[in-house]
Structure formats: structure tokens, C-alpha cells
Length: 444
Image (cartoon, rainbow, N blue to C red):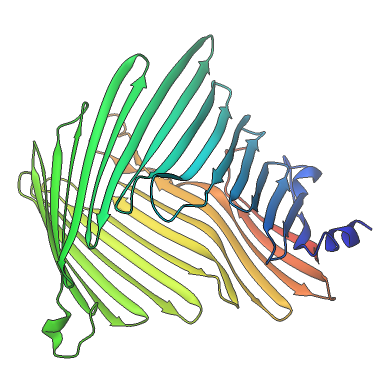
């Protein structure tokens, strides 16, 4: 009866998935159960909705959205807890946006949005609560001039033992934008008030393209809390250098300079489009004052239904260890692949860290295989022992989980599933675990 009612909800589609995982002390039977629910409205109507829910004993996630005409609402909530360490986190956001119909010309409000956000964390030593909210108005003054006004407030309440503190802040910001032909100019001032102290910031950006193959840009920034900065950049489409008939975008080069009161940095970059499915780029930046040199390289492209990208950087400074980072991502919204996944790594001796996050899957015929990853790993230097000097790498600290689930259709609307889940440990009483699960999914 319940499943039939879900399937008949005005043509809505979705799924209801129940999994049972293996468990061992100090986990209980409640930790074995995982429930996922998704629903979305049929397309083509004047309004639409979608919701997704995950419920487990130690984490609960909810995302829901609704749009009707020019109105859009969204709710997000998340809770996590660890009974072994006796801590928990809670967060949620409620947002609304409106896109009014615009007259062809003249003064008009172009957009409106507002939000409220709440987050809280609780541990044996302290509790923190954060409230924030804001408004945004977009305004069109003319065909070439537009702007926006933003306001936000924050309230942070911290309690630790018998002491407590409350921090309040508010920010008023805006932008004024001019656009005509290939020239854009924008100014972004802001004023903040925190604990009775005021601060301000002003940024100005300009960009123009005097020729189809040449782009010039510059920006400047000044604030009450830091010295002013400025930068300028030149970008040139050098495809013509590769021969007559070479399409634009095949090769581009650029150079930039950024200046502050303490130092300046010069940089150069190059990018080439090897073919429609592969683009390669690289850059180098040098700061004479500190002899800092930073090298970067990136690649992006498409392989079948998947979009792939990778980037790496290496920063050097005399007398310090090089800083190296690398990242890669894959995403797709075209069958048989779906979702997105990111993997990153950073190292600067003696510290290093890595992370992986996202959901990515393969769906074809009766088979649906999906992976969900939220893992972080860090290794920091440990203090030297008595009588020793220097630092040595400490132990890796891993947090999060990774789940691999394969589902197979055994009927028109029913799937059976098997899962393999890795959960990082949270302490000596809760070591890392590899858990197995079985489940049943109903699709409607």
C-alpha cells in the first residue's frame, strides 16, 4: 500500500532503499540499518520538487527543493554524532530566491534572495552555535549598468566549561557593474562591524578586449586591515602563430603582474587545445623579494560520457621544503555514468594530507554500481623526543567513510543490493572497520 502510494504521487519518480550492514561491539543493531529515500516530480509542469533523505544511527541528511514559477525554495539539514567520543554536529540552511520578470529597459529589481543558516557542535569540552542570515537584491539601472546590495549577520555562541562568549558581526556589501561591448568595469565596496569594531574593503575590476585575440584586465583592492594590492594581466590568442587556418583557441598565452606594498609577483601561462576533447595548460610565477617560484599544470577533457580534469602545482622557496599538490576529478550526467568524484593530495615535509569526496556510479540495464566517498587523511610532524632535535612524521589520521554498492534488478521495480563499506576509526574503542551489507530497493 505504501509503495503503491509513492508510485502514484502525481507521476513522481524515486526510490526507497533499505540496507542492513554487519556490526560489532560497541556498535548495536541500530547501527546496522541504513535508509535512503529519493523522490522528484515529473518534468514539464509549472512547478517542480525533489527531496533526498539518508537516515542512519550516526548520520542523517536531508535535502529538499521546490520551485514554482519564479520562486525557488531549498532546505538542507545534516546531523552527525559519535557516541564513543560523545560529540555531535548539526547544520541546516533554509533559502529562498525570486527571479522577477524584467521589462525590456529601465530601472528594475533583477533578483532577490534570502537565507538563514544554523550550525552547532557539541563535545565534552565545549559547545559552539552559529546563526547567520542574509539578504541580496539585484538591480538593473540600464542596459549597461547593474548592481547588487547584500546584507548578512552572524551570531556565534561558544561555551567551554564555566566560561562562555558571544560574538556578533554584520556586513553590508554591494557591487556596481558596467558592461558595454567587450568592456566591463565593476566596483565592490563592503563595510563590516564585529564586536564594536568597523572595517571596510573596496575592490575594483576592469576588463576589455580591444581586439578579438587580445584581452586586458586589471584589478585593485584596498581595505582597512591590510595594505592595498593591484594586478594586471594580458591574454593573447596566439593560434595564428601555428599557421594559416588554425582555429582560434588552439593556443593562448598570457602574462600578469601583481603588486603589494611588500612584494610583487610576475607570472606567465600557456594553454593549448590538443583536440576538442583535450586541453592542456601550464604557468609559472616568480616573486623576486622572497625568491618564491610556483609551477602549475592542468589538463581537462572528455572521455566518452565522462568529463575528466587534473591539476598539479609545485611551490618552492629557498630554505623551506617544497609544497606539492595534485588533484583529479571525474564527472558525468550522461548514461551510463552519473555523479562526480574528486581526489586530492598535498605534501610539504614533514606534513602531508589527502582527501576524496563525491558520488560516482555506473547504471546500465539491470545493473547499478555506485560509490560514495568522504575520506580525509592527514599526517603531521610529531614532537621530538627528549634529547633529540628536529621533527619526525607522525601517524596518519584518517576520518570519514567509503561505500561501494551494487544493485541488480530482480523485478520491474525491485532491486537487491550488496554493499562494502569502510569506516575510519574514531579512537581506540572504535577502530577502523570493513562492513558488509545487503539491501532491497523499490523504484517508482
